[in-house]
Structure formats: structure tokens, C-alpha cells
Length: 134
Image 1 (cartoon, rainbow, N blue to C red):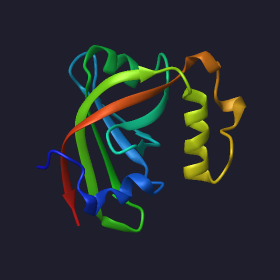
Image 2: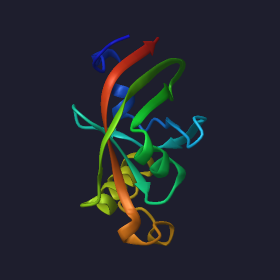
Image 3: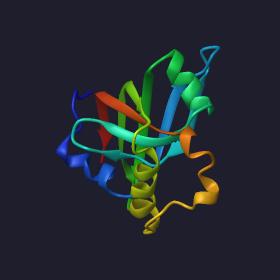
Image 4: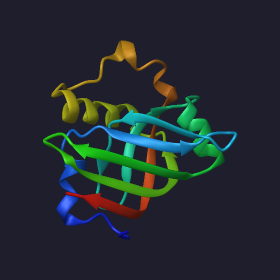
């Protein structure tokens, strides 16, 4: 288990890899769902919306795990364990647009799917441990 994201697998955060986020539910049960994600060299960010299950879970227990399989090699993956350090509200819609560019090649996330703009947030996660394969 590594304490930082290894150079050998950082490309998975640069590619349009789908990340599966696991959180702890209100009764201790695991909850997982796919997200888009990005990495700035320190924090992992993913777009989210106030009120959803991950939001509720992370507000009670900040522990989180993310994993992605290389879209070009299904036997290569990166798992990251860490903690939510904050919810960013400033720039959340712009971040969602950046993710639409990265994942879809579109300049803007469709506004009809955004919902209330004030409900958009960005999760900021501090990686603590990583495991890799491939």
C-alpha cells in the first residue's frame, strides 16, 4: 500500500476513466457509485449535488475510496483511499463543465441536467493510501 499516487498510475486520473466512489452509509453499509474525477497533484475532485446519498454519507463519515480500471487495459487499476476535506461551492458548475470537456469532449455540461445551480458542489478528497495493479 502506497501513501501517494504513483507516477505509474497517475495517467488514470488524466484519462477519462470512470471512478467508482465508495462511502459508508448511515447504517454502516457500503455505498458505491460511478463519478467523473480529476487530480491537481494534491487533491482529487469530483462533481456532485447537495442531497444525494454520497453527500449525506460523506457529511457523517469523511472516509472514502475511489477506484478506476484503465479504459485501455482492464487488468490495470488504481485504488485510492482517503478522506473528504471539503465541499467546494465556488466554481462547481465550471468544474462540471471541465469534466464534460474531459469525458465527452463538450464545452458545457447540459444545463437541463444540472438542476439547481446552487445545489452543485465539488468534493475535494485528500488521498491517503493507494494500491495498484498492472
